[in-house]
Structure formats: C-alpha cells, structure tokens
Length: 279
Ligand code: G4P
Image (cartoon, rainbow, N blue to C red; front, side):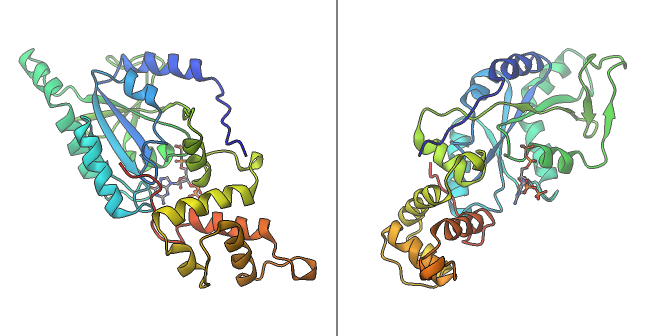
C-alpha cells in the first residue's frame, strides 16, 4: 500500500511563511513528540535560519517519556531551545515564555544597546497539519488580547497577539505540509492519524503498525489484547479479532474491524504512551 500525501499549495504556503518570517524574531516549531522527525518539515528549519528557534515536543502526554527525554537532548544539540508540551493544558506556558526570552536574549540585548526598551519579541508558530498548532495557540494565548493592524508599530494585514509585555505572537500559524520521499515517514504519519484515512486500508496499515510495535515494544500487543501472540502480524491480527469478538459469518475473524480497533486504541493511547521514533 502507498502512503501518499497530496501537498496542496506548498509553494504558496512557503511564500507566505517567508513573508511572515521577515517580521519575527523567533520561530516556535511544533512537532509530534511520538515522531519528532517525521512530523517536522525540513523547509521550516531552512527558512528559519538566523532566527531564535524553539522546538515544542507537543503531545508529549501521548509519547514515551524516556524517548522524549532523548529527543529533547537531540534537538538541544542541534541548536534548538526545547520544551516538552501537552497543549491541552497550560502548565508549560511559564516555561515556554521563559524559553522564548532566553532564545531571544541576543536580540533583546541588541535593542537595549540601541536604546530601545521594552520592545516585545515577536514569534510565529509553525508546523505541519495536526501537530496541535491551534490547540497550542488557544492554550498559550489564554486571555491575551489581539492587536489590530492599524496601531503604530503593528504591521498592516498581520494580526499580533500580545501574550504579555515581552512577547507577541503572530496570530496565524505557518503551516507546511510534511515532506517525505521515505515510505517509513509516510507510515508513521498515517499511524498517528495525520494522513487522510479514507485513502488507506485499515488492515494493511495495522500490519505495518504492529510490525513497528513488535520491534519497539515487543510485549505491548500481547498485554493489551490479553492473548498469546506469535510475532507474525498476519496471524496475530486474527487472534486479536477473535479475542475482541470481531467475527464474520461462519466465525471467520473480521480483520478489517479488528484493525480499526488496534489503530484507534493506539491513537487513543490505550496501548500506552508509545513513541515510534528514537533519535
Ligand atoms: P493543528 O492546528 O496543528 O492542525 O492541530 P489541532 O490543534 O487541531 O490538534 C489536532 C488534534 O490533536 C486535536 O485532536 C487536538 O485536541 C489534539 N492535540 C493537540 N495538542 C495535543 C496535546 O498536546 N496532547 C494531546 N493529547 N492532544 C493534543 P482532535 O481529536 O482532532 O480534536 P479534539 O477531539 O481533541 O477536540
């Protein structure tokens, strides 16, 4: 099965983002903590060259905490400021603000030397679809106010949100599509639900997912489905179907239904906090 991605208006999105980048000091890039590399668009890295770079390992509540620690170190070694985030709550807001200011310390110091005081740093949220940008913006912004375009110092056509005296956020995130020549990247995006499911066959995706889980977390499926498994995913999905009462006429295991269950339970973190990529 082909895991495909139909890149809508990639060049338009890139052009818009390049324009926005001229206005900002820092790029806050969101990735999915379960697959930080596969959910990262390499163009964002290139385009944000020279800006302060903050990486949010979002959905870290769904990822394997030990692996997320490893990713944090990895991205720090690549020059990012990194925060592990669950955008569904605001517990990381303080840490993120602090990190943005630390990442922009050189810019703040340059302003100070020029006699410019209290000019907020400006940041933009970037990421591929479904990594949680809207959720994050809502949580991070809280009750902050939107600044409209006709005040002095506010660029026309762009909306800025004042987070506090020190930070302003561009109100529209930069969205770039994932990029993959590599079939494994496509698979992982499909597993987490970031590729339109309608074009995919459940059983085939499930076999691929089970192969990943067997390699990374050998006991997880047997434990979750309370059944002895052989390690052969084709045989094991049948066993899971039987265990879960997914049966067709004549007591044939209903593979497609069982596959849907496994995929949904993986996505709902019912199989545990699992990461699909290690640094
Ligand atoms: P986007 O703007 O980048 O496209 O992503 P969006 O915020 O729409 O988030 C995509 C899905 O991911 C949403 O789930 C959202 O709730 C969930 N999400 C975002 N951040 C986090 C996080 O840190 N942890 C967890 N556990 N989930 C997160 P949904 O099922 O589409 O919507 P909903 O039913 O949750 O409202």
